[in-house]
Image (tube, rainbow, N blue to C red; front, side, top):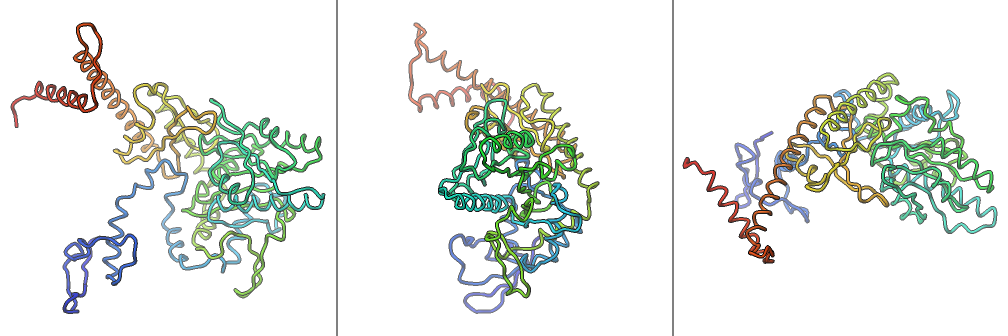
Length: 495
């Protein structure tokens, strides 16, 4: 949007009218980066300056690195804007309704009209911090009652956990015991996890939807193995399920899969509303099995907003618009709507998977069941890598991450494409087409480089076949000379 701007001349203090923003001084003045400017500027100018900067950001819908929702219905957009000035702490009813609905979705052992135990957060990171604090405090209280030391708590996870688990461990002084991965097995092994459990373990964290490959970990097997170990040792080690990505997928696509509160040792679950809960960032949820699983001393009660309100969050004030958006999605879509969307995501994932496999150049690492994503690696990384492909995809507007696997599988490098609600079949087919184009370009480039290298090596070798080592500058000059000769050969005389 181009706007007309009225400004004030600094010498005469008289208003100066510019026909457009781009005729004003604000276009040529440097943008403030470190200090607040001394003078005000017109609101239209401030808008245009920031809007121009935002054009440099990538297209969110083509950012296939992110699990975060990038599209919502216009009616929900309007609700968000209408509630953008409302504080979360002033809301009594809507967060509780969402907590109750999600708790029932996760099969919490509560009655139909009973209030569930849970809280809205800014995302799964805060939700995990709160769940971890509850586990730590319960463990400490029990150890104190037994007269045992409580200064060395630990938590057992897979090496595939999201970084928020590392933050929790470091911020709240809990040792993080990670089950290492192996090539071909990129999730936590329940057997190895239970072997690492000891009397200082506050919980075992299972992932429903690994960030790396989208795979669901076997929570039921973990529950069974841990139950046996608890019986043998007399411990009471519980399970937390990090369902940030899979919590809004499994209930609709895999209703028979037992991963939630149907398993006795699962005491808390977190889920990201801004991922497959289909809400813009940032909103998350953490649900506890019962009141006994959330120590009362962690809950604060305030009344200076008019009524007694219990609160258990890391922050106080925050926007309520995302909570309202979550409530909108839950009642707008219902079980049927969420199921249809998740089925569409999985079908488009299958289309993309088939297209990538058809190139014959990649190995698919993600499973067909799990979070709708495709993780894949090059079968041959001798000439170029997945990082080259990722970089070249940006030329077409795509943001596709390339990364290496965690400990014990670091040699495996992959690309990952996350399929969200707004990623259609046509986009999947276009992405495959662009990947094929890039593969052909990289093939041609690597062949040309090999040809140049061979030609230079031949020129540098003497009669005895020994290659003379040259400086970097000499090599660069020879490459330039080679390309200059190739260009001259192709000249047609037309300017």
